[in-house]
Length: 454
Image (cartoon, rainbow, N blue to C red):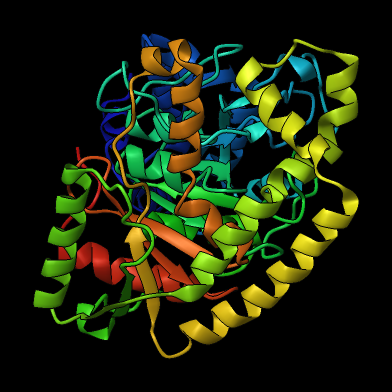
């Protein structure tokens, strides 16, 4: 094994890219180091649904040639990436964590994977997820439930569960996931990672297995804000947003105390409050008060069923009816909730939601970024969720409570580790505010320390 490449698995994706461009790191050796680490890891089968060794080697060899010729394609040329198994991969099964799609093998890459490949990234493989991306807990007894970095007895968060685990266990330097109601941010928070929820329409969904098309988004998980920014550039084909100096004094943060903190666990509350105290001491402006648009969005979700369940049934209801009892019963029950909502009620919800979205953006105008805990409690134990259906339902809805409102309101968000396990700090911005969020996240990260817990 190449000692330099093996050591490089502990580096950031950005540092790996810089070392490849400088000729100090061989991308082929780096890919093989990750592949060896995956194959020898006891939980590899719970994290990766399948690997892409032939494709990855070919991409790494092409990156090596470019680096030797001094013509790298970008800052992450030659850097390996894991992909949630709902991104189509040409000639490789893409099953979205469900036996319902067993054997589904696309002929073309998803648009974002094709773009990332064109920018020089190296495909490691496909990671496990909640079935059809429809759970915030990451529980999937039908295929695999990845472990949490703080213990295999704890759930990892979902639906991008394997994506988070691939990073948390050093089996990828970057991971690509999706977020419809919290599916990037929840596993990022519960595994002390950075996770970016992008705005609908920022990145193409072509070739992504759908859940709720009006809410589905693509987003990266990473170990640092710099890596997250570079990953966004990789997905979009544009230059990564500049992060600036990361000065906490540039931050204006508004804590929505009336929502987001309900029933918060003591340890999570201590982590969030400690982070806010440190940010204030570092010069950030922190204000507190209500944010009424969040409350209105929650009322709509409670009264007319979340939009995701209706659109999920529209996408998958016919297939589910044709193959009953194929899904995990808890997931199938969620899908079937969407069948109970009339088209008229759904249309009414969307009309009301648009009005609330407009008010939310206006309300944010003079408050800076909205801040709240990403998830108000630590990850529960897997066995408790598998043996108690009511507990599963209540924990799943509560896990999604803070994050899904961001999706319903069409906003952007990023979760940053606070240094307290599982206590992610969620920064929420207007639509298409990803660059602003990344700069703010960089400042938060600098004020709080290195971020992810080693």
